[in-house]
Image (cartoon, rainbow, N blue to C red; front, side, top):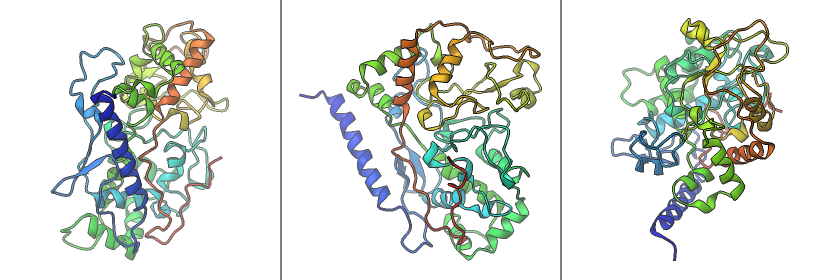
Length: 396
């Protein structure tokens, strides 16, 4: 007979499947002019029309006294409380090239849901097909983050999105041009009224655009991987080789969990690792520029490892094509890839763990258990602007 805890886990999995079925049946509003009235999977609709995130991690209230990499540890505070209509409007905007200056790019061009909300490229492609300096990070679980961009130069999602929207090298638009395009679209005029009821006039405002996109991005929750099932008590969810890899990951020898701390699998801090650049690029100063701090030269935000198997290539530079290369880099010694003319303050825990090939292979096995795209939203087939989706044009 199964234990009550096992029954509870299985019941939660069944509920998730039912929610996914409901979501799949409601991919597009039937008329094409109405926004969703229900929350995305994993969210509860309140009486005042707000979507609140719900997960089994709500059981764990403390982030302390669990040890580094503790299995049953709570999550950081999440940003939620958007309406279903705002989230769905943000979904349309996210995939719509009307947001770019020449209507050739959308947010999804660099953050494609089929590639873990990254883009499968070592360096993303911007305006006029030019390569950008860095790889696109994933957007999964950004609702938990306190800073954004590889160099942590933005503190909110609204601040972050203004970077690519208005950069000449990326989406190459301006607030004025963006609003003119949206206000000229009958489809969007109606949808903004639905998402922001009680507006004093019919004009779309730039802060409403930011709110809607932030609402959609905050709905991208990935907390139902096989690792999570294991953490919640269903130990059969992981195979012996994956459990072995998890133990290596959490060990004092490998120290992976010092920075990639479960359950979010990032500590949200800046780390100077000495990761190499692509061969044709100069050294990237990273967070040194953000904080005007020489000790952060070459420092970048510790990325989440959630869905890491979907977001190759890796590092800010997209240097490593495979996870095997990443774990080998960490195992190869402190500062071994730092250019001869650079002197960096390498993060304290980077050393020479001397892991065996078997241990490295088991680490990669474990990282594969962090994949969960069960709540991946559908890409709109029809956009309110009348334009066609463009997010698949640059992928491999």
